[in-house]
Image 1 (cartoon, rainbow, N blue to C red):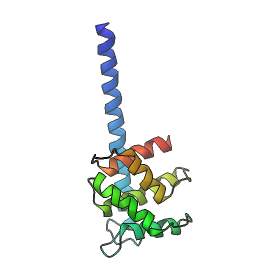
Image 2: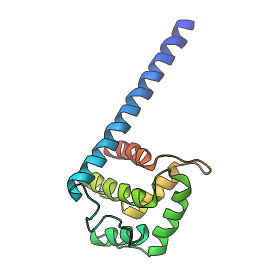
Image 3: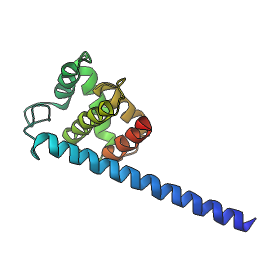
Image 4: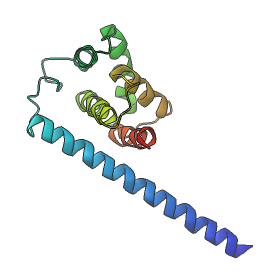
Length: 146
């Protein structure tokens, strides 16, 4: 019985390490894609700048990609909630959402928008918790693309 428990624990730790490695790899690829698409700077027109709010940029991002661009306040409300849940800045969170959308569509996943990604991110982090939102989105991408 003890051998079965020990084997189960070893298998569990192996699965955790593999999953952590996948999340790290996907996060690295997201950052790499962002740097390639913006030339390594944040001057890209779809990147959140100091003069624009994340809500306005994400609404416009959705509109530019044929996703309607819902009311800006819906994006703002999600970003407000996430500002207390993410250890990342709002600017970074908006950029992660843009990059995640681009990554999903490049893998044939077409039923997401920036707003739905914000909502999935919000739902993935328990109330009262703070997490690295890039890692949470990376795990979501792994699930959706597999």
